[in-house]
Length: 331
Image 1 (tube, one colour):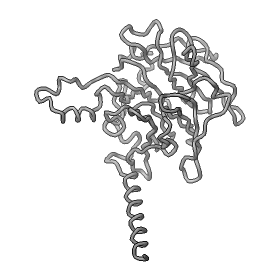
Image 2: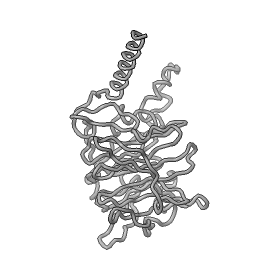
Image 3: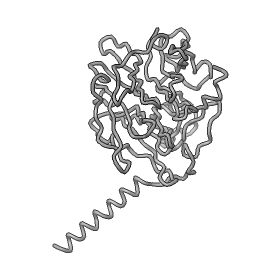
């Protein structure tokens, strides 16, 4: 019996070690920011192709200010969750499911990490996208995330709240949808004296004609980027587009600028958009197909279709990014 007990203890140790090594698998990339990617200029590039943009359905980027953690959403047929890629002691490790998003009885998406890296907010919902509300996790001593909790009123109500975006000063921007009318607006809740104020809808032209949703705020609140449908500037062939709104010194907002049209972004429908922690880069999702089926001729094998499922540009959403400061003069 003693021999068997030691055998099982040894076996448990080996399995635990294997599990840890799998979760901390070093990646063949440089230790620099953004997993060593070539930084984009005014032309959008795919974000970390083969590691983050993989041929699966990825969107919703949020990055810590020190650049050591990259969070994003992974959508699957029957589960949606939040993935994180971490750089530890200069080495990037294989992305894993974030600790607070491992409950398979709920969906998790749309992460937004605070400027100090001590809080992260995100959408959580029941399967089928019911009960959509904003949740939060806080850091524990040692750096791990604590148990996620749903934000109380006045952030969450009987309506649907989703797509949180935190400014550097702690102000929270988010989408709220009336489940009966299906109308969606962008709200702002200011962070004051350690708590959030009662949310107020942003004025026109941000909340105006058409439908606006999934908005990302610049760290200094100087501009807002969002998904917009039904505006006059939206191209007829596109059901929605990405729009930019500048925040004027007097507190008003500029008329929306169609980024897809102005910058000719490779995108057919707006899905999600966000801003890097220094305000330099904009990340957006696009499901435009770049791998046509005719590429499989003349073999037409099942193997080739399996290969396509692992290729970026296969019709699932990929993440792109571009240098916002490089295109300012064109906007």
